[in-house]
Image (cartoon, rainbow, N blue to C red; front, side):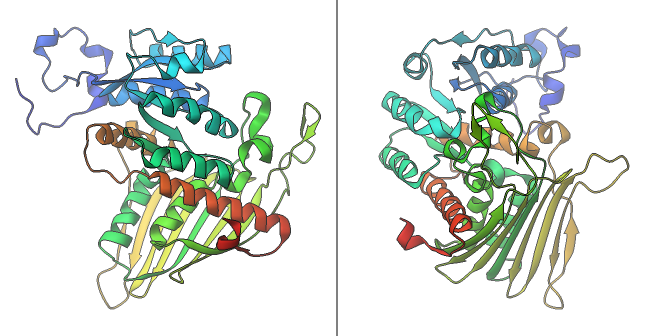
Amino acid sequence: MKMGKELKNRTFSTNPVFEYLPEGDKFILEMEKPEFRFNIIGSGVMGQEHIRITLMERRATIHGIYDPNPKSVEMGKNMFAFMGSKEVPVIYDSLEAACNDPEVDGLIICTPNFSHIDVVRVAAKSGKHILLEKPMATTIADAKEIAELAWDYKAVFQIGLQYRYKAMYVEAIHEGLERKSVGDIKMISITEHRLPFLDKVNQWNKFSKYSGGTLVEKCCHYFDLMNLFAQSKPKEVYATGSMAVNFLDFEHKGEQSDILDNAFVNVIYENDIRAAFSLCMFSPMFYEELVLCGDEGRLRTFECEDFLPGERLKTSMEIMRGEGMPSRVSTPSYPTYIENTGHSGATYYEHINFVDNIKGLKTNTATVDEGFWSIVVGVAAEESAKTGKPVLIKDLI
């Protein structure tokens, strides 16, 4: 039997109630057989999410796991049972073994930020396809080294800036850059209000020397989007920020936390587009907002999770065109089972794109160059917040 355009639904296909069906009788419920095998390097929260999504997307599977923390390995193994997979992952005792297993097609690197450079130096020697989690590095020097490794890399080298696959941003990219619904973009504004950083092994995300700082660690997603909408390179960055609420008295192994929990960042681009980013990490909710102002209209989109009961819009997008063209309001979203996979479904489509890249299909995944420039803006913002002075990008790099 050959599948046509019949609607596929992975929720139905993985529902155990249908296990009574012989494989030969599955048509609508038939799932693709995995074509590729990936290894997970680092199976903390993000690594577990990548295991889950890989097993859900089904065109690939997870062959093995490497993580020096035994509890992380156990949680990674548990994800197989959670997803109903009968496979037993290989557990590696070294990074080199995990990167060079001939049974494996690709590597998904989800280790702490500061370790990316050392892991990539080993992983790149394998020649395997690589998906490197954001931020690609914590310093401009390390990001440049990774970029240079990737420029001539024969296999796929994808950067995990997956917010560009969230439904609200997919629609905004389509309307703002492809349809040009607001004309030529002149101003960009992004806001994130959220809870504090959660706990990590050795609490590495509470210290700038390990995370790169809040404006690198957390905000590279948004700087990637700002760079994308600006369609230009940053020229000047000015930022203010402080530790106002979170981790003021937090110490780990004798070290005092030093990460920002709030900031305002202004970016001027080479094409004179202005962009602003606002961050608050002591908000009892998750809220993201993007506003694009062009010479023919305004686009605003948001996503909100406030944990309150009652029916309200979780996401919305409005395009206001005045008298020039029709305006409209919509609710960008994915099916619930995809949105519940993490990052509002963006990680799922990141994996769709990773496999498509491996298969040679055209995608809009973040390139290594784009990953590099998201780090540049973050590092510049951290520097400006420390010195209180604007940072010229030409001086920084």
